Image (tube, rainbow, N blue to C red; front, side, top):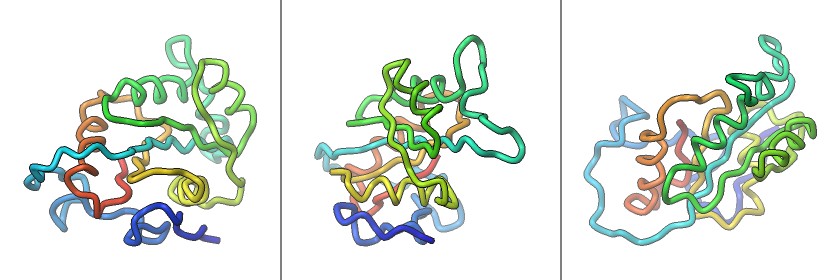
Length: 165
């Protein structure tokens, strides 16, 4: 089941059309189109889907890397990005939620039957007051520059309600 579009997100955003292309039609990761001169402040929420049940690596978000669970590394890197109003981990399992709570992060329980991270975000975002949502992959461990660029994007292009890294 695909959750309905969150009522407070732009009409163009839905779980089915969530992977809007941000730039050139051929490259959804391209953010080099001219930025608007508008510098209006928008409410950007970064969502980190973190599913417990995985066939390849069960409990992957809790896997310890350099003394911390993977989900904490991703949350900390995302939280360090300027321009984000909120960073929230979306999980289908309270064990992940308790770990997120333990390091001071915010989390929200989502149904286990959400088929993808995008569906998990669509379900949770129904109640959010957000102008845009960034879908941060739960196993992302790279530098913060790409997220920072995505966080700036909604102010210049409010028609893009969701961006995925």
